[in-house]
Structures are given as structure tokens and as C-alpha cells.
Image (tube, rainbow, N blue to C red; front, side):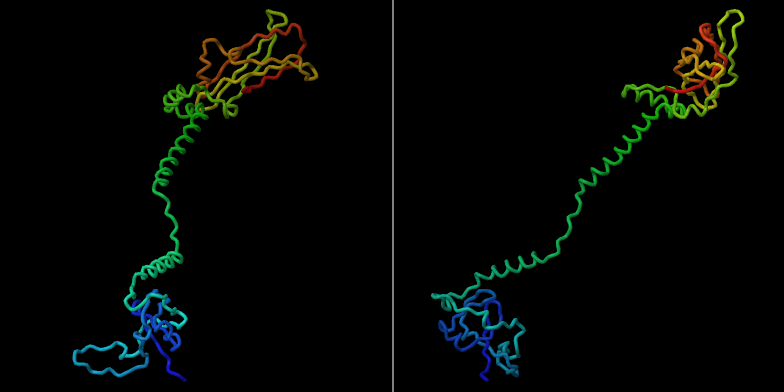
Length: 280
């Protein structure tokens, strides 16, 4: 078996296995397949066999004498014949940046892509938008339930009134859930002895709420002996409440409203009545 031949690129120090036929082409001029350097393969031949270090006078030595160089060993297929017109004087390292570019591209290709961090500007926008939306939601709820809030917490009525001036709304005695605090006490219907066909309705509307509530509407119904409706009439607050009362303030907390109405029933025959409260 013939001894293996090796040559080393002076540009990148890569070691190649070579053949005699390959070195005979173009008088040994070859191109490194790694860094593209053109060099004389015969002049750069080395041996990879371990050798004893020989003493030299100037303490200089050939690194090949120490043993196999610690460089990349490549097959002869990585060497190419040098293009025509190249000689030893043409050997240069101008093509080495191509190696650097390929290495950088390789690293960038397989580098782990770090996820983009959210921009600080987005965080600032969220930090402003979220509290603002919460404030707007609370303001909307306060305006929607302004009547109940002002009634339960009178200290807020002034601020709510100012807000209503801007929003074009008004604050009234609350109606929501007011019916559970209202009742009709001592209701009675009697004929007026002084006027034939005239009935006198007396009742007392009482509030059990600890805050003002709106005056309810009353539904008054006359029935016959079969409990069939003969006459039905709806009474608004101004129809049954005294003229001296301020209806806009509502029924005072735990207050009551006395009712006395004269009803002309001369054209009907009745045996009973019903009286209900409601809010339209």
C-alpha cells in the first residue's frame, strides 16, 4: 500500500489527503475547497506520522515534527485544480471574507429567535386606558342609579345634581324597589250622606323606607255584587295628594300620605271596590 500523501492549505491550515495524479495537474497548483486559497500542493506537503523532536540551534522547529497537526482533515475531493493563470505569486487571502460571511449566515440561520418583547408604549397605554374605562363604568352606573344613590346617601346628591346638569338628566325620588316599602292603610269607601250618588274614599299610603320614595299611582276600581268591574280609574299623584305637598321630593322617610277623594258614582250601581298602587 502506497503511503498516504497530505498537503496543508497555508490560508486556513486545513489538511487534505492528496494523490500524485492530483498534484501532477497544473504543476501542483490547487484551490482550497474551504477558504478558496490557491497554493502549491507539492510545496505544502506534510507528514502526519509522529516524529521525535530534533534539537535545533536556534530553538526553532517545524510544528509538523511534533506529530499530527490539530487541524481539520478533509478528503482530496475538497481540493480543486487551480484556474489557468495562477501561480505562486497569485496566492492571496482575498477570498477569506466569503468564509466569514457564510459562517455568519449559518449562525443566523440556526440561531434561536428571541420573541419580541412587548413595547413599553403598549403597557403605558393599557395603564391609562384600564383605569379610565373603570372610571367611566362607575360613572355610568352612578348616573343610571342616581335616584337610588342620592336617596340612600344624601351626601352624594349635590355631586350627582351637578353631573346631571351636564348630562341633561334630573334626580327624582327612587321608584326601584319602592313598592316593597309602601302599603295602603285604613282604606274605606262610604256614601256621602249630604250628596246622593257621591262616594267618599279615604286611605293612608305609608312608606317604610328610610329614604324618600316617589309617590305611586293609584288604581281605583268599583265592582258589582259579582265582583265584575263597573268603573276603573287611575289616579296620578296630583289627583290624590294635597296641593301643599312637594311631589318632587317624594314621600318622606317613614312618612305617610292621607287620601280623601270624592267620587261621583250616581250613574253606576256598585257593591265593592279595589285600590292598588303601581308605578307606570
